[in-house]
Length: 269
Ligand SMILES: C[S@@+](CC[C@H](N)C(=O)[O-])C[C@H]1O[C@@H](n2cnc3c(N)ncnc32)[C@H](O)[C@@H]1O
Image 1 (cartoon, rainbow, N blue to C red):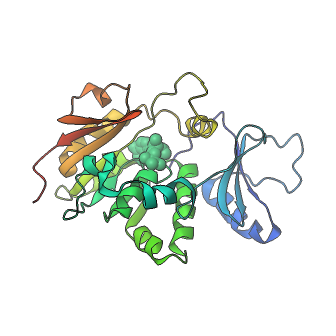
Image 2 (tube, protein in one colour; image 1 turned 90 degrees about the horizontal axis):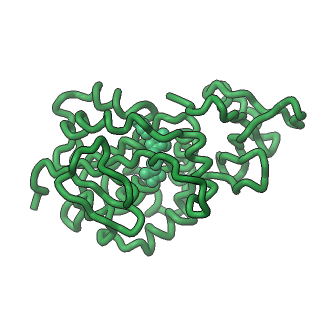
């Protein structure tokens, strides 16, 4: 597991005393320092991974930079998209070949905050997710754990289709059995950071700072192509070139994103 930036200092904190034992445990697991209850000026940090009643969140040290980053499946954008996002008509569903009859098994090599995996799981797909960044992994793991205990049984059913694994997707692909195919392999590596503009939300800038630019993403291509039974789907920004300059079978173009599809064989009828 990795933590990208040596320049980004992250400490673990807790907002109420009863979260202290879990915070101590998390700090030890992640190899991070626990923030003192009353931090002094010589206890500098850029972010806190904070445990509190809402769950685990990443909080910037300076309150004016952006709000907490937290993984929520029962509210906000994920929940809104599940209810009103357009079901199988969404571009990601078309890219992955999801239909009323076909609910492919998916391996998401770049889970991030789990948004895309959640959409696919909401549409009935079983999704295995890989995440190598320990901070992002912890946020996602916590979001999944909270959603798994939701009072909403349909949300619990979706979450039960999602399985999160920690570690690098390349090792996962290398270590999986030669005949261990997923119907669809999906990836959405970080894009190189654009110039800091109003268009790039502060949360996204923070994500960039913590995760980096996934410069090695193209190295996943050969193995991913080998292990995808039907398709490899790569999400790109609309203006980005093909990953590794490898031309896909075709693309689904949207306003800001594009799905490059490598079709290995015809989807089942
Ligand atoms: C742009 S984010 C993915 C966002 C995600 N699709 C979502 O909807 O939230 C890319 C993520 O992939 C992870 N990642 C990149 N390369 C990886 C690899 N080889 N193995 C595991 N995780 C990887 C990064 O750490 C980052 O969290």
